[in-house]
Length: 169
Image (cartoon, rainbow, N blue to C red; front, side):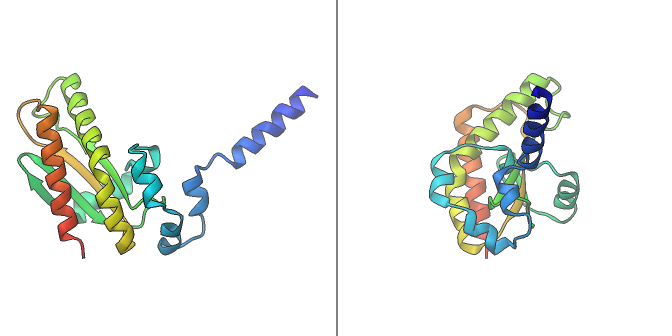
């Protein structure tokens, strides 16, 4: 009897294993996806959830082969307009080359700083992308030679995002 109830719970969990964002987008268009996006709620939380992170290999390959870029003091944003499997207007990834930072702890610290700064400054970009009903895949790359302070990272990420928003049509 217990096995049957556990099996039934397991089946229910498997059916609902898709995140709400992916369940909503199963058979909908991009414009319908933006109907599910609430800019006030998603920008007020200032979180960076799993659905906001870029992790699809095919999309990453396409991003680097066809994407455009914006740079600011060693910080580069590579972006590509794409249809994403989420209702968020953008998915982001963060990279620090091993060439300049041999220690993983340094690379991880810089990526943490980049994610934190992006998390604080994405609200204005999300509002603009929601207005335009566009989705973008983006990759932040740090190409400096030294581990930066948070104030420097925040200033430059903010400026890079401002440049990106200015280029939107």
